[in-house]
Length: 351
Image 1 (cartoon, rainbow, N blue to C red):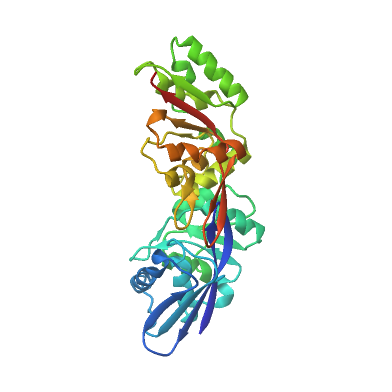
Image 2: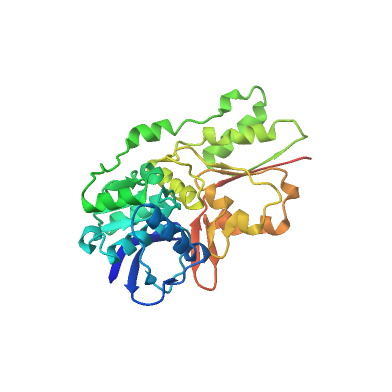
C-alpha cells in the first residue's frame, strides 16, 4: 500500500516542501530510502524500525521503499524520521491517508519513540504558512520557536504514539501560542552593559561614533587595556532590534542548531567572537551541504576578531564580499546558496 506524508527540508535559510512517499509491497524484508538522502537520512531506517516497535505498533516485515520528493535535491538531517514512521503506519492501515492530509510533519525519533528537536523549525513554519497547511506537527522542544509565526497551528508532540493519537482524533492538542510582545521584551535584555566601563573616555567616544554610523572599528592597545571588554559591550549601544530583524537572526541561529531548546526569539544584537584558528568555511559558511558561518551568525550584530594579525590571511580575504555586499554566496556543484551577512566588524590587536 502507498502512503504520502508532507514534510519540509532546509535549503540555505529557507525551507521547501518535501513529500515523503512510503510503499509497502510483498517481498524480502528490506528498507530502502531514495531521493538523494545523506548518511543521517539513510540511518533513519534503524531509528524508525525501533521507534515503531517500541511504541507498541507492529512493524511490517515486507519490502519498504521510502521516496523523498523532489528527488533531485539532496536531503540531510534526521527530521524525516517522524514522517517516515507515520507513512509506514498509514501504509500498514494503522492510520488513514485522510487523517494525515493537510499536515506537515518534522521530527527526529529516538529508539523508544520519543520525538527529539530538529533544526530550522522557524523557517519551516514560515514555509508552512505560505502553503496554507492545516497544521504543523513537530517536536515539543521546537514548539515555541515555530509559534512565533502567526497563522500556522503549531501542534507539539512528545512521542510517536502521541502523534498517532493526535491524527486519529483521540487526543486533542492545543496549538502553541506565544506572547510575541512579552517574548520580545524578555529576550531583549543584555547580560553586559556599556555603562559598566569606567574611564576609557576616548575609546568609548570612538565606539559611540562607530555604533551611530554603523562603521567598522579597530582597537589597538597593549594587553589588558580593555579592548575585548569594550568590544563585548558594543552591541548594547547599537539600536534596538526590530521584530523583522529578530526573526531573520533567529532563523539563522535555528538553522545552525544553536538557538537553544524552548527559546522562541533572539531579540539582542548577536556578538560573535571566533578564535583566530578558524577556517575559511567556519568564518563565511560552507560544507558539503552549506551551513551559515560566523559572518551570518553575526547578521545584524557584531563580528569581533580578537588578535587580528593572528588570523589566516585567506580567512581575512574572504571577508571582502560580506563587508561590501552584506551577503555571502557559497557555490557548490549541486547548488549555490546565499546567506545574509550584514554585520559590524570590530577587531583588536596589540601595537
